[in-house]
Each structure stands twice: as structure tokens, then as C-alpha cells.
Amino acid sequence: MRNLSDDLTRYYLKAATIVTETEVLVDHAVLVDDGKIAAIVSECEAGIDVVDLGDNTLFPGFIDLHIHGREGCDIMDGTQESLETISKSLAKHGVTGFVGTTVTADWAVSITAYQAMASAYKNGLTGAQLLGAYNEGLFFAEAHKGAHNESFFLELTKQRFDEIYAACDGCLTSFALAPELLNNADMISYITSKGVRVMLGHTDASFDATQEALAHGACGGVHIFNGMRGIHHRDPGCAGALLMDDKAMVEVIPDGIHLHPSIMNMVYRLKGADKIALITDCVSAGGLQDGRYQLGEMPIVVEQGVARTESGSLAGSTLTMELGVQRFFNLTDASLVEATKMASLVPAKFLDKAQQLGSIAVGKEANFAVLDQHFNVQATLCAGRTIYLAQ
Image 1 (cartoon, one colour):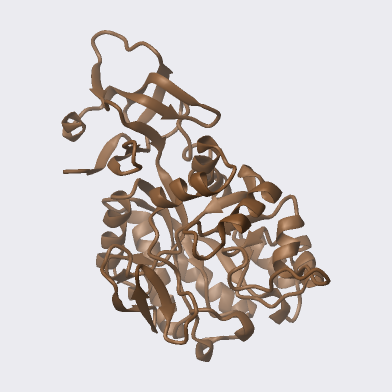
Image 2 (image 1 turned 90 degrees about the vertical axis):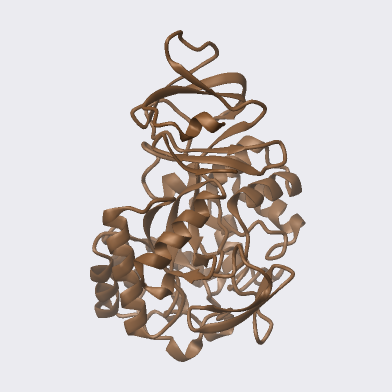
């Protein structure tokens, strides 16, 4: 493992097991050449450095599509220093890419957060890379506000979207909204025409309203069941519409708290591994002790690792991605390959980056998470470069 700290440009990573897109390979090696995966082999060619990972497993680098912060820092801080802290913290947990996610806040604070992400997106970070910005806030329904401060809720207009889009300067990937609050569903078509994916969340939308939003281009659901009208046997609600739509992707927070394990398994059976993205929805308290913290401008309390608002609503999580993969694998019928795909390839496809990221395959970036038999992260590599190495 110590050889990972060496400045190598062409080398083999040999592992007891390697999790690819389709199977778990035993006693294989990955050839890394100038930051890319050049080959996956059972025998290493002589004359090329071999980094032996021993009994560890080589996973693709995880991608977190929905995260607010870690280690005392929040996306809403709007600073490069906070983004750097989040980036380095994520690297400790096998994450090589993430989408910075906002919460409802003052308009000027929100714009500053987007501008900061735009800068980090262009200039890069030293740990996990920022792959985009996610608007989760401002345009939600009070009935399912969750940890969002309704005093800052606004009507969604083209002018407001355009202002957010401009502040992001090319990095806005996802936009969450409550569709029942729109004056016209054409707003969804307008947003998607800009290359931004519309996610439905913090909404009291009916089954029919959700179907209409999906027909206009919405592509998925924000942390399914949480922050949306659930399923009743005479009213399938927003959750029911998302689960029954073959094209819709749903986010799942696999901490065993936001969803009962049986519900996680139900989602898996209905959606399959290709339409679920595992997310952490982690807040600034992630990686820290229990106590009082902020989620944007909302005070939250963390007890036994569970984050809630002062009124008792769940407020994101303190989950890490490697633990999320482990829990989904252990608590559902999903295979290890499938659980891994939900934290890597599915997010990469969602971001239209699957040709470069998301799995261990020839031609892709050499992004890896090295985990031991207990799912502890031993190392994380981004484009063949070690960004985290356990001591």
C-alpha cells in the first residue's frame, strides 16, 4: 500500500478482488497508464511496477450526486476553503466525484454558493472532484419542506432560473422543484432545454401531477419517499409515480434511517440497479461528533449520528458513501456489483459522464476506492493519483 504514495504514471494495481460493471474478478490487476485504465488482466507484464493491494478490494471511485457538506463545512458557505474541506473529506470515503448541493437560503447567499462552485468546477479541487452543482431549495412546497426554511421559498420564474444558471457558469447539473407549484409545466421543458436535469422533491404533487412533470422532461425523484407525498392504496402519490415510471431515476439515502430496509428492497425490486442512485445527503456534521450544527441557515441537532431539525424532521444525514454501499448490499437483494453500480456508474450516466467515469473499464479514468474486508477505505485514487491513503 505504501507504494501508492509513489509518483507512478504507468503501473499495475493488483487486488484480491476487483468490482467491475458486470462481475467481481478474483486475483486480477488493472493497468493504469497516464491516469487512465489501459487494461484489466490476470497476469502482469514484466517490467511494469506492480502495486499489490493484498486482500483488499478495488472498487470504482464513488460518485455522490447529492451532498451538502462535511467536517463543519457547508456548500452554502460559498467559499473555496469549505469546498476544499468537503473535497478532502469525501476522498477519505472512496468518493472521487460529487455534486455540490444547496439548501433553501437567502437569495444572495444562494447565488454566492453557486459562484463558488463554478470556480471550483473550473479550477479543480485536491480531493474528490466537483462534478456539478445541484439546486435543492427555494422552490418547494411547505407541506414537505423537511429541513428547508419556508420563509425563503420563492415562485420559480424563468428570470430566477436564468440567474442561477448564469451564476453556475456551466456547472448546473440538477434542479429540484415541486411541480404542483409551477404556473405551467413548460418551465420543466425550459430547464431541461438548458441541459439541466429536473428532479422532483419536497413536493405534495399527486400521482397525475408527477406524471405530467415527467412527461415534460423531469427525470427523477429527490431522496425517494422523503420530502414527498407517499403511497396510499387509493393515492399512489409522487412516490408511486416515480417508482412506476420506467425511465425515472430515484435517489436513495441507504442509511437504514431514511428508509426502512424493506422499503429500500421494494425500491430496488421496482427500479432495478440501473435506476437507483445511492446518495449520502450528508450535512456539515458528517465526520464530526454529535452536537448542534447548521444546514445552510437552519439549525440542526445530531444525536447518535442522526441529524434532525429542532422540530424533529430528518435533516440530511452523516452517512458516508462506502457505508451506504455496504448497507444497501446487506439490507436488500442487490448484489455487490449492483450496489456498487448505484454509487458509481448510475451517477456517471446521470451526469452524462459514463464514457469517462463510473466503472472499472478500459479507457476510463483511473478512479478507484480501495476497501478492506470490513469496507474500511484504505486508499482513494483519482485519475491514477492517490488523493487519500489510510495511515
